[in-house]
Length: 346
Image (cartoon, rainbow, N blue to C red):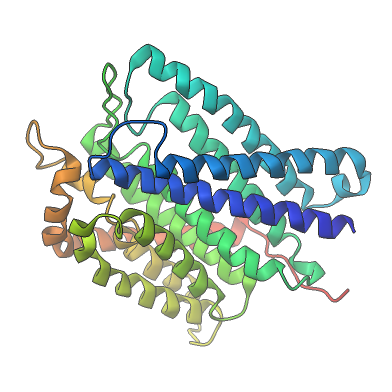
């Protein structure tokens, strides 16, 4: 019974994190479209509905951990604890954001309260993923399908967290937190391929069966496309580009699951494939980081995103090499530091 309660908590939290990440990303797109700055908007409604669901999961997790000593001893209890910690971050961020606006007016993407909120979402999503991954050995049928979504959401929120420090849209009424253009590109080019590859590799190794890591990639791309591209018709030109990373993901999945046998460095090659297309995985918003180098005064990065598509091929050709190197290194680190759950029959 304790296992089933834990799974229910994790799935409730998973649903909340999906709404949080998707709603938060849609909110960024709504600003591209010139939506009025207001708390009461559809994207905020989705975002804070997810926050509420996440808090409900955190509350149930607290009750479960207090009442069931057995759960506290299990490895998956770490997932429940992270869900609670993430919920505490979000409780702090809500009223904090209100007072921040009262003091400083409209803000940009990066602010202390926004960073607190997205950190809480990231911690909760990581908790869901860890909890589900550590339940794999118990062979509950619902765990692996839920974990596919969890990995996809974790990938999406990780990229969103990195965006906090790389996108030039953090200027508010009174404060400017926009990153230095060179620092932003260095952060993006190192962290995005590293964590994209890390999450992909972990999903392929823990879910084991060929096709599951490809589905994780499809979840990630779907979240990105539906929140960042579909609502903005002037960005639809980016859609065909996503065929390339999806194809690379299927190829990398086949290599890791040994459907394509490469005797030496197979998993590292798979990591290099994922890392090489990090730029497309993170489109269209990643374009703003590169736009900074030729933006002139008074022009918003939002307005130049369609133009970025015209130079995307050239920039991808340049960035795919360092991305592939980082992807290779990511797998090398992962193989040393991450243990993969082993299935058992109960």
